[in-house]
Length: 90
Image 1 (cartoon, rainbow, N blue to C red):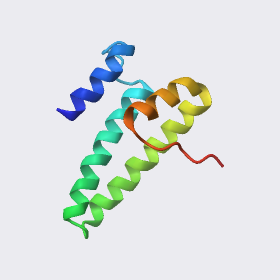
Image 2: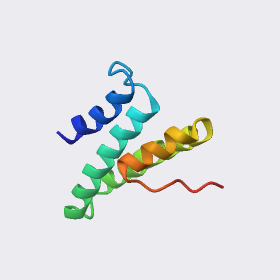
Image 3: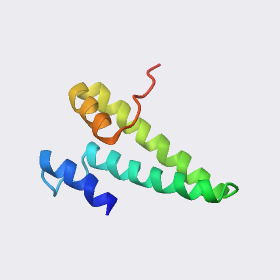
Image 4: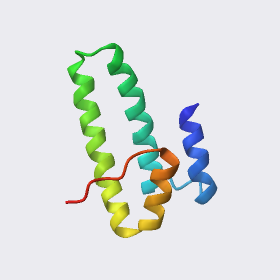
């Protein structure tokens, strides 16, 4: 149900067929991250879920870095809609 809400936000701007877009991928990764963090609050010693969370966080970070370099306006809109922090630039 939450995933459908993220999809509806993105589908208003782009075609719903474009599920390979950076925005859609970041939304789906954010949804997975939120589910895993709520899972890890209950199961603190689940190391395989912690590893999966770190991998997804890295993927999302790389996608956000790409988006911020290519189109800063879309990047700002996306992080505003998803309520996530800006990435740290080196």
